Length: 259
Image (tube, rainbow, N blue to C red; front, side):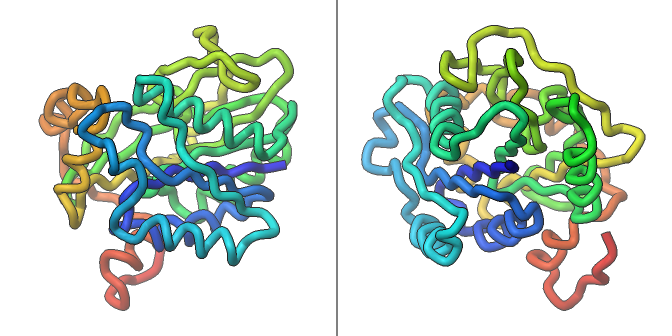
């Protein structure tokens, strides 16, 4: 079984594109978490989306009721990242994931090329080992002409395999005790996609910089802002191609659809 877990909060800029992206992966089960995970008092009353994202997601789940489930994000652990990990764990439990199954967690503003999805899915079907995919991610901050390209050694936003006895941690290095997530820091082995030139594309505040500011104001994430981590100094001109699904959003009929 292949399970896709999507995480949304005030994503009106990208939500329609992200739902199309889910269809490109064509998972067996879709678990969508709606709402932020911030325990910070300033977000009291803002747990759910206020820009229409929630309603769009609920309609998508209704239209795909044979495989899609809607869940609320966990918010009671007094830590943004632990709430995130608990939400993903909750999604895996609801999906009744078992050893040998694959799962992926996606963010609304992150994508890979459609041709890369096909390659990765063929690898998933053929390999018995390998649980996540270290690869490079192009981070676009507020424009699409420049980006900071960084290695993601934990394979966030790409499929991982649940293996008997394997231990892995959630995105951003947070572990959590549970059926699937553990606080053991031993990571499962992975496979390297460098020779396939598969890269991720992460779009932050392209049309709404305020949404990006809100993103980092939540919980304990102020220190993770791009400029705080020096990402802005690592930005260089982007000379590649954006995924077709992103080109369609940004340029519409103007694109030459070649990925």
